[in-house]
Image (cartoon, rainbow, N blue to C red; front, side, top):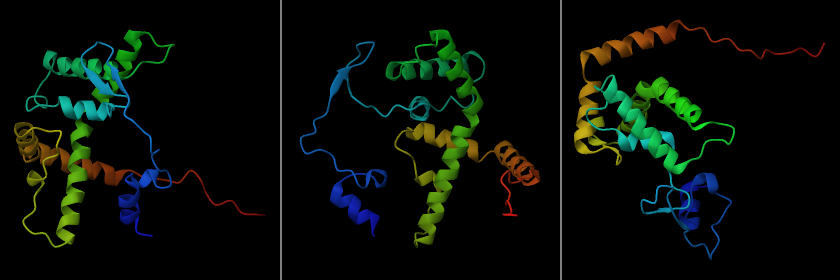
Length: 184
């Protein structure tokens, strides 16, 4: 079955394939918690999306108070769209989100680069020529931000860190925790 034809027919994503939207569906609109305008009922505001939208050309080089300011902006935007579980104090929720942001700060761009490299390889396989990551600016990065990110990926420090990480990953041993169990 050709998924793209079915997707066009139904107007939904592959994950929603058997589901059709109701014919009488109307968008629901609500005010945000802080009263700043209207938003759709289910805004796409995952933490990754928030980080991408808040990222600017200075974020990568920011350290100390500037980096903390970036984290605070992301956390406040996250709180505009989500509520912490009832058993969490506000400070505990902020602490958990901040720890997640700190732990995954570098990996946001690494995952972005990997995703775009796969896209470039697919385009090259399809016959496109002269395609480069710099040409594939995602919609959530401004041109200045995108140029800064691409410049960062081209630095010798990034290449060295990438090479060291690749060597370290090759040394890891992955053993299966589930082994074949004989019927005896």
